[in-house]
Amino acid sequence: MPEWIAACAVADVDPEDVIPFRYDGVDYAIYRSPQNEFFATAGHCTHERMLLCDGLVMDHTIECPKHNGRFDYTTGKAAGAPVLVDLKTFRVKVEDGTVYLGIG
Amino acid sequence: MVVVGGGECGARAAFALREAGWSGPLTLVGAEAVPPYERPPLSKSLMTEPHASAPTTICDTEMLRAAGIDFAAGIAATDIDRDHHEVVLADGQRIAYQRLLVATGATSRRLPLPGAAVDGVYCLRSHSDALALRDRLRPGARIGVIGGGFIGLELAASATVRGCTVTVIELAAQLMSRGATAHIATLVTARHEQAGVDVRCGTGVVRLERRDEEMLLELTTGEALVCDAVVVGIGAVPETSLAQKAGLAVDNGVRVDTRLTTSDPDVFAAGDCCSWPHPLYDGRRIRLESWRNAQDQGGAAARNMLGADEPFTTVPWFWSDQYDLTLQIAGLPDTATTEVVRRRPDGVEIRFGLGPDGRLLSASAVGTTNAVAQDIRLAELLIARRATPSPATLADPTAGLKALLRQWPH
Image 1 (cartoon, rainbow over the protein chains, first blue to last red):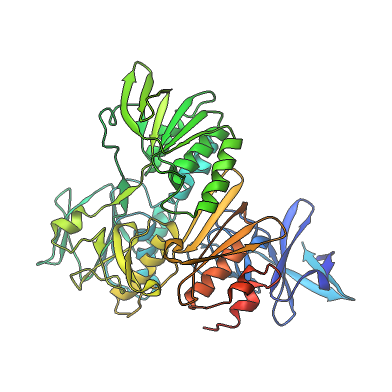
Image 2 (spheres, rainbow over the protein chains, first blue to last red):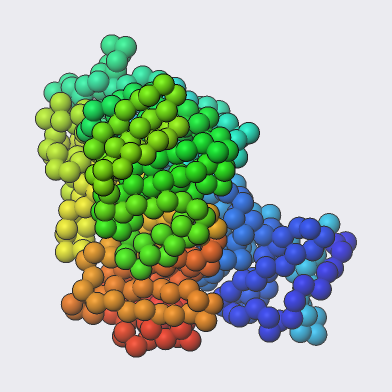
């Protein structure tokens, strides 16, 4: 079983947006889809380690703010040049208005 | 399929040919002896991190092999034999092609001055150029940067971070006059001056002279500037010699149509070396020196080489990193007739450029690290969709650009 960490409140993330979350020195990105589902990935782009939370969320895609590397944040799948390596994803659950990140 | 040019454009095109389904022979010809690497870090992180010496590779030899790309490294292509559909390499090898992509990039423009070709005068284009220059960026070194464009200013910032004393000499009245708006130029100039850079606009260099270990720059103001090393960043010229020799049309770069086809239907060109009529800007023929454009055009050319009929309409996009600042520009600011300013609560100003018909044609901004990325990216999408947002909405920082984008669906 993963360790569940309270990351943020549901209201902290706008629909179709992303916020940063840092825990134990590690950066994560927490997403809220246009359908109000929550997802989490590693915080940095796999291309040049830019923080993804400054990037643009469009539907289920997060774009790196620097070079427009694109990932499907629901699966972590890289969507082509310049990003060739997939993004690590993490489990997420929502309970009583709190978003929990599952790590480990 | 043959791709000539082992830079960003050629490498991305080679992989895109495979992704688009080409399973036949595929050769990538690169004049540099190393696998394709990214050039943006050369003026930035490679200069400021003196212990990192390897280039940021786009792909290694194993990835090329796995994709079935025959990589002819360190060999220049010297001729295109269009009658026989063959590329001739410097070592005499002839490689047959059905379709050929010319992605030869650009080379640094040389300073047309006496003394410009001596030791102590550096240009930046390749990884080896970068390592040679970096060696001179020692703390306390006096560095003269000729040219206040993107490359010159990124190098000025990197040299300053390394502890050098930097003077930037720019012929035009403002920095980055070719690529950026006056507003951006003002902010960037202030940041350089705050960091201790001596910025001299409206100033030219009359003469360079080497005196023992020092370089003497004689300026149009009559002053003499003594430097330990001089960097020349006065733009780039498209590398068209191969195309020209083969009789292909050249017009500020290898002339291609919106499908990136040259005057020979079996020969394509993409990236810094080519000029094409941009459909979003009334077919105006443009040539870009841009990392993202090289990448995107490489992909589009590859698909068109395989028979796709894909016009290249991608919005031009540039960025530059100097100190903690990032500037981003989408579209072509010099095509706009009206400027609208959005002043965000965090102090960032987004400058939108509109055409006479109210269409959004450009957006540019400067901010720390990635503060401007989302807005410029959304503006880029609006430009691509030929959106005509009202100036009042654009100026209103509470009106989200994402909501605006929904008014102009694909």
